[in-house]
Image (cartoon, rainbow, N blue to C red):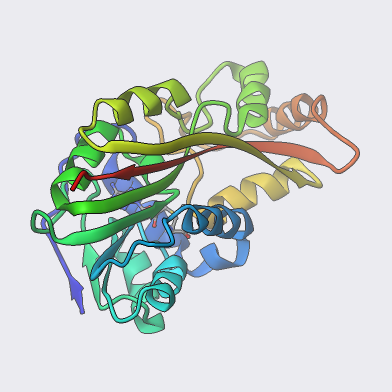
Length: 270
Ligand SMILES: C[S@@+](CC[C@H](N)C(=O)[O-])C[C@H]1O[C@@H](n2cnc3c(N)ncnc32)[C@H](O)[C@@H]1O
């Protein structure tokens, strides 16, 4: 069952409707290129306390539902909720099972009752939320006492090579903006939830050329959606200039693309 909810307010950057549309379009291609996303989600799952036994879990920003299916295996017979802002992702996830309910909704305004979940798991979704304080406040509201919010996200430094290369070409914003790690820290500290752990790890992917990287970002639905991004066609001369600028970063393994990953675990006090 997919439950449709009213469109979320466009209350931040990038625009939520664009984020939803972009991920909906990417639903069919996402799994084929989501190797790093699998690794990060698995590392997040490993951070969920072994002694936690939720009777209901929420996969927040579930995407194609890979981690919903792992949560269902790990926590039987708990009820599972897979929630995402992109209807296309939910339609892709629904026939693959895992969760009991599939809900279209926004992490900043959860369409769920207070104290209804024992675990909120969210891998690589909240970097799309302009208001992370609202996400934390919603997590606190929805968690049961003793419940856990485990999230993985991205911070400043992510895709820095691509950002710097575009900067050298035209000085414009071509890469999504990310929060500073210190902002995650401050917001978690102020959330009213107990901070169990907050860490940052760099992961570096290598690509044979710039085109492979930009194709992968598009297949993930994660290409640049910020206002201020350049519109219109990207001219051949600018692409060649980008390729040349990115070559400065080349390593023996290929062109590096750095992801600065944040892992956070918070608990609502008993
Ligand atoms: C990179 S995918 C990650 C999907 C999945 N968690 C995984 O690890 O494979 C990010 C997902 O977050 C969803 N998302 C983005 N903003 C959201 C929001 N405000 N509320 C709920 N989901 C959101 C996107 O639609 C997308 O499916």
